[in-house]
Image (cartoon, rainbow, N blue to C red):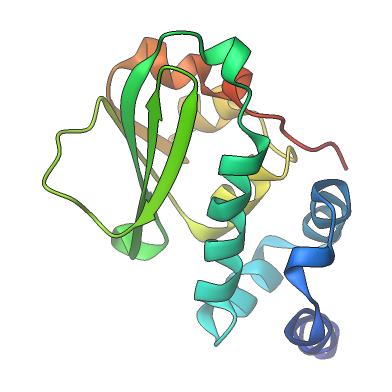
Length: 155
């Protein structure tokens, strides 16, 4: 537990805006599932989630998304603890925190560890789906294409 406390302390002092996606992917890869859960139970939870979702807008690949129009709802954490929405509209991407009244084309539900591993390129969405660590409701075809719409870092 001392290691996760040290890691949490390091993360608390980290300027997330200055960490590259690849560095973040390496940080996540170096943590166990238990360490990720402990870190995301604390004060850093919203800070980390907000930074990850803010990066989605910057890592969006409009050429790959083409004329896609979709609202993707993300439910992250125990019992979908935090909700974020990614709106893709013909080459633009906007992320909002919280659930809107809009109808999503796809809703992705996953735990904290699975989410961080997914967005940091440290897990396969297909494997996660078939092992039921990633639940998908709605347009499965859109869900399958999402990894092509964003630059996913490699650790």
